[in-house]
Structures are given as C-alpha cells and as structure tokens.
Length: 429
Image (cartoon, rainbow, N blue to C red; front, side, top):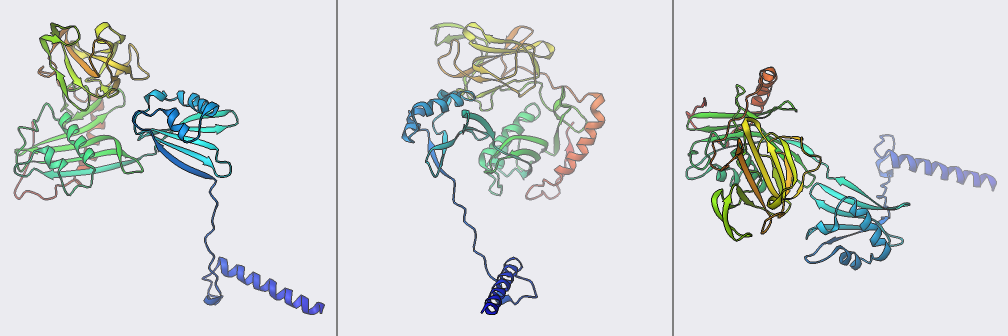
C-alpha cells in the first residue's frame, strides 16, 4: 500500500510539473500542442471608485461637495488645501471635479479639480490631513507641415481654415492664420494682395496633449508666394535678446511692434482726441484704443521693453507701462492682475504675457485700454508707421545661416496639394 501511495504521488508531481511547463512554454516543440493549457486573465479588484461632477451655473463648491456627501470639517480642510493654489471663487462654470473614494469605506481618498487643459489640482488625504499639489498635463513635441495654393475667389484665411484635406482642428488652423498675419503684417496685406495662384508653405512645432489638442504653437519657417515673389520668414532666437522672424539674409520681416496687445481683437473704442466718456459723462481725449475681451484674457507686450511702472494708477486702474527702443512707450490699463515674476525693471519680450484683462479704474466692464506714445506724445497705434525690427546681429550670423539651411530642408517637405504648371518664384527684395 505504501508503494502504491508513493507511485500515485510521483505521478501527481510529474503531472503538475508538466502542467507548469506547458503553462509557461505552450509552444515548446517537445510538448504536444493538445496538452498546452490556456490560462485565463487575472482579475484585480479595484481599490477605488471614481465619480465626476461638473460645477453648474450658480452652483458653489460647497453645494457640489454636499451633494457628494462631503461637508463639515472634511470639506473645510479640502478648501484650505485648495486655496494654496487656486481661489475657489475663481472656479468657472463647467469646472470638472473628480472624487476618488476607497471601495471598502466609501471615504474620499483624493479629489482632482481640473483648472484648465494643462493643469489639475490634486487634493490628497495624508497623515497630516488634506494636502494639495498641481499636476501638469503631459505633452509631446510635434512638428507639423502645412501647404496650399490659393484658389479663385478664396482668401488665405479660407484656404487654410476651410481646407477639407487638412486633419488639423479648425481652431488650430485659425491660429495659424493669425500667426502668419502677425509675421507678415508689414510686408503683405492678406485681405487685399493675395490672389488666385499664390501659395503658402510652413513648418511649425506644437506641444500636443494626450487628447490630441495642442498648445504653444510656433512657426519655425514659412514661405508665402505672392505674384511670383517669394517671402520667406525664419524664426531665430539666441535665448537672450534676439528673437523673431527674419528673411534668408537675416533682415527682420516683422515690425518692431505688434499691432494688437491681445490675441482676439474686438475694438470697442478708437483713439479719439475728443470722446464722450461713459463713466465721467463728459467729453475728454481718449488717448488709446480699447479692446473688448473676457475677464482674465492674457495681455501681451507689443514690443521688447522694460517695465517702468506696474501698479495702481488712478483712472487707469492696474496698469503696466513699458519703455521701448527709439523713444517709444506703451501702457496697458484696467488689468485684473499682473503676470507673476515681474516688477519695475523687468525686461519683457514681444508677445510675452504681462497681465490679464480686467475692469479696474474707470471702466464700465472688462476691457484693455492700450496706449502707444512716441517721445511722450500719444499716437494712434492702429495708424502709426511703426519701426522695423532689428536684423540678426553680426555675431550670430553664422549660427543663423546654418539654421536657415536646416529649416529650408524641412520646408521642402511641405508641398502644396497640387503644383502650378510653369510657375516659378523669386525671393522678394
């Protein structure tokens, strides 16, 4: 009997061993295929339950959390952790709030508050109580090519935005048109000078989020062919004082100033030596241009400069004043707040965010009041003949010309969908 028991046990051990071999090596030629076993997928029990809420119109954060059964001391501790990064009053309608709960106890273990497409505030339960942190949306750097030919009856805007062959989101195409218009504003009038048969090519880089949307786009090189002439523009920077778009020889293709200090232009009041003031109820000079924009819209420096004033200034409200080259100054008024990390004496670059639209001072609603002055004299920024940008400095020319070769090779990959037979182009002077 003992011998029989030993025999059975040996057979069982051998069977388990063979089974183990077949489980980890099902394609081993030494083992018959019919003996291989299929192992089912492992199942892990989730440790948390996730629920998502959206802040509704007129709804407060306390109301939303109360509906999620979070109130009292716990809500107060969460609020305190949140205030280190964001004022609860500034959370907008549609803010997405994700609550993560332990499965076993149903107690919240973390809360994610999505501030914008690029950042989320994570509130986490710790031994020290509720703690906050900022989580940035990961991005990948993309290089994108775009090209096309202007058809009869179409503008450059229509050619890019309504291109049915493009796989770019419409909003991204609109921003490309705005970027091209900004680069070429002193050389080409896209609304009047572009004609059928003209073409464009460009290469730009962007930071792409996991959901496919993008941010921080920058055109690396562009070329617009207009009436047989080629207008190239190459972006170059030394990461210090030199940055902008230049032609193939290093001459700036941009004005030293941007026409507009915000991205989305809606003019509500023009420069006027005698305008009726809606707040004061009397006629007085309006020495700048007003741009209607949502509260919090970024305000951009229109040229390289130095901050000479930042603070409260009477009817201007919160104001930033910049000093630029050749005796020019600019003012940006009625700001809700200033950009972080800047003060009097700070150097800023053209296109850099210096503040945010508000309604401080004598203002009936959120807007930006923008002034341009030449040697202290106010001038109409929309009509003024603005100075050209500086060329690439001689000490950087070798690096620039090397970059031109690299970027031109990239541009060769951006070809229009169809070519014009017999068409040729010459570089514009």
